[in-house]
Every structure is written in structure tokens, then in C-alpha cells.
Image (cartoon, rainbow, N blue to C red):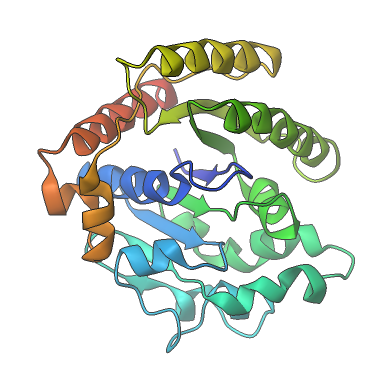
Length: 254
């Protein structure tokens, strides 16, 4: 079953890029064909796996229809990727024509059938790039830290999803909310988990049972431009993300 997944939360620092890379690498290790799309002008996903964001076409050229997806895809050991760089920051002003929400969907259409999973890393904003991701996606995964502002931001994200469902993609749904950088021994984290669960109930979004514990291995892997499992498969974060991949696949196959 082919599926396009958007990883989204308009709040920064909640491990969107880490989750995108770990989910993609975990699925690839299980034998699936995986493509990631870096839709964040910061290009953190691109940098974190050592992709080239400047000497090859990127999502910017792709969405401007100046390059074909076959030209933009880089085949890496961890997974395939369409990279991004800072040029994508001008998308809000440049993509202003009618149908701007459909640009990503239209441009990647020729390669969708080649992959089992396409995973999109979105920017920390609810603008045209994130809406493009939601318009092409089947599902949305929302990473969030156990903090009051991150939890409340999910409601704003939900409003955007509802509008996309109404006007652009009535089939997209929230697959679940994933708690990241979580400390199960912290009373505050436990309280925030309860708040997140309440918000999840409010927006009718499940909370993944798996949570991702904080560990330096994530930043170390990104600094070395390699995926988490290859860098340190014995780390707590690698174990947590492996469990998350299993949990996601279990729900996906039901």
C-alpha cells in the first residue's frame, strides 16, 4: 500500500526532521522503497543525511516546474531524498497563482508509483509549503514535545488541516501525535502528556503509545550526516524510533 506522510508541527524544535529521517530509515531497513522530500527552507533533513542541496535540483526548482522529480531525487544509502535549500524561503511570495496548493502534488506525480512510502519534512510554519504537503499527503504525523506551547500549537495545526480537508484534500487524516524528547520520570512531562492526550481527543487524533526519549545520539548522527540507526543503533532514541516504526506499520496494516 503506497502512502504519502507529512511530518508537521508549526512549532520548531519538536523533532520533525529527526522523526522524518528516522521513520524513513526505519522503513527502508524493513525493505520498503522510501523517498523523503525536504520541504523546509532550512534544509536540515538534506544536511542531516549528507545530501547535496546546491549542485542538484531541489524542491524549489521542482515546485517552480524548472526540474523533473527524476532529476531532483538523490539516491542515498539511508533513503532517497529530494533536497531543499534556502531558495525555498521565497515560496510564499513566488507561488501565488491559482492552484498553488497543488504544486507539489502535480510535480511528484510521475514518481509516486515508484515508492512504498513518501515522507515529507515540513517547515515550522503553516504557510503554502505546509499546505502543499497536506494537499498531497494521505496522513499527517505530528511530533510534539511535552510542553504547554507545543501542545497548544496542535490546535492551530488542526485548523489548517480542517481547511485543507475542506478545500484541497478531503482524504488526508491525522495518523497520530508522537511525543518526542520525552522524559517519563519527569512529573511535568507526565502532566503534559495528559494535556496532549486531551488535545488529541479534542481533535480526534490518537497518541502513539511509543514515545521518543531525549538523547545526544540524535544530534551526533545528524552532525555526521548519517541516519540514527547506522550511527548508533543501540541508542535509546534508535530503540524508540524502531518501536515507533513497528507501531506505525501495525496500524498501517490493520
